[in-house]
Image (cartoon, rainbow, N blue to C red; front, top):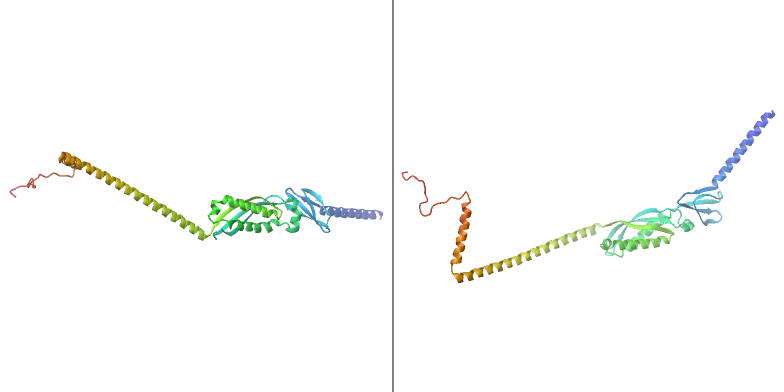
Length: 279
C-alpha cells in the first residue's frame, strides 16, 4: 500500500515538473525573437507604443504579450512600374522605370508609425508616376531620345529627393523602356519618308545639273572643233575633207571585209551572174 502511494506521488511530481518545464519553455520561446542577416526589428510596446530604438541582427528578448517585433528587410530590392505621360508638344509617351530601394535604418520606427511594413508598395508607385509626369512635361517627344541622359538625370534627382521625404533610400533609378503612341510613330515614319523623298529629289537635281554642264562642255568642244576644221579648210582647201572621207571609207571597208554575211556585187547594169542565156 505504501509503495503504491510512493509511486503515485513520484508520478505526480514528474507531471508537475514536466508541466513546469513546458510552461517555462513556452514562456522562454515567446520571450525570444530572432533578427536574421539583412534585417532590422522595431518593437511595439502596448504601454509605450513604438520604441525609438532599432534592434540589430541576432536573438533578443521581449516581454510576452506586452511587446511585439516588426521585422524589416533592409536589403536593396528592385521595383518596376510604368507611366503614360504627356510631353511638352502634347504627345503621349509610355515610360517604364526601375528603382533599387531600401529603408533608412535610422528611421524605421517612423516608417512603422506612418507607412507600415509595405512602405515601398505604398509610396514608390505614386511618387514615381508623379516625377515621371513632371519631368516628361518639360521636353518635346523627340527630345526624350536625343536628350535621354539629361532626362534620366532629372528623373533620378527628383525621385531621390521625393523618396527621402518618406525615409526611403534609392540606390539606383533608370528608365528601362520608352515608347511613343501610334500617332507619333506614324508621324515619325512619314517624316522619314519625306526626308528620303527630299534627298532623292536633291540627287535628281544634282544629276540634271551635271548633265547640263556636260552638255555645255560637249557643245563647246564640238563648236571649237568645227571652228578649227573650218579654219583649216579655209587655209588648205577641200583636201582635209577629202582625206577624212577616204579614212572613213577605209574604216567602213575594213569592217565589212571582216563580216561573213556581206556579199559584193559588181557595179553597173550586170547584176545577174551565172545565168544561162538560152533559157
